[in-house]
Image (tube, rainbow, N blue to C red):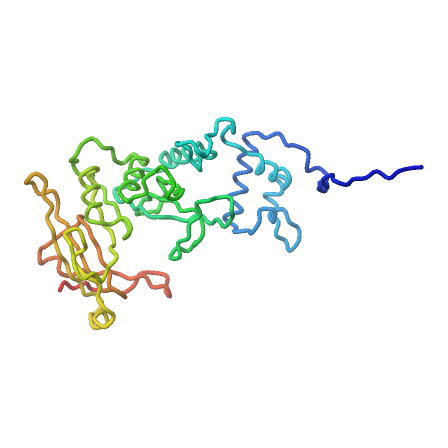
Length: 334
């Protein structure tokens, strides 16, 4: 009597396509192809990388298909490592970093970015978002005012002329050991870029101007950057409706909608403050309130002028319809 073998309790084996177990010898050239395919998939905005090898609806790309097979690409993506797992720190370690598995690559990219471009005198610091909606990263951020609302936030220092990324830092959440205050973020980015070094309490001017948004801009931040690095700042300020103003606040309130509608477009009001250190004038700070489509506030210690010759400015505007700058808006001082 023949007894049929029982498979109860055994795991069901997944169906493996023919040839998918054949391991490809990974060479430096193969890695270049691998990263090139990743860049192509991002530039073409394909939903899945496997679509580059597809034949249905003509979604495949012959350039990618001839360079690497789909199974080889998936195998490299699954097993690629940049750090030995035996050398990784445990999560309860005080020096544990969520990015420790890819930190060598991030450091290498930072060095190569600095070698490929000479940074000018005008810098800009802002946040950028890398689109990610998965569950494997715990520090995914939500920023509703960004074009990419869900993803990984990156602090970026760029050239204000060309937008070239020169230094960056990935934000890993509040639990990170790094201080996330505006002063410390600016300090780390400037030190990474090598455009400033801390050598004393007072520095001579380096000739650089830093442009920021309202998260970084403040009277204390401007003084900190000027005294420590010798860099001037220009930044926007969020207007508030506070009833009282202290010495460290922006000098102008936010207008109500009824008052804003009565103010002509191009109207401007300025206030000045002189900052002294040891009885010596350090710099003059200007606060500007300008009526555009809405009220906009600026703080800057660059291009400060109190003479009558600077009472009128002309600003060209970008036309979305014509795709170029046209016309002008005159800023008249109150």
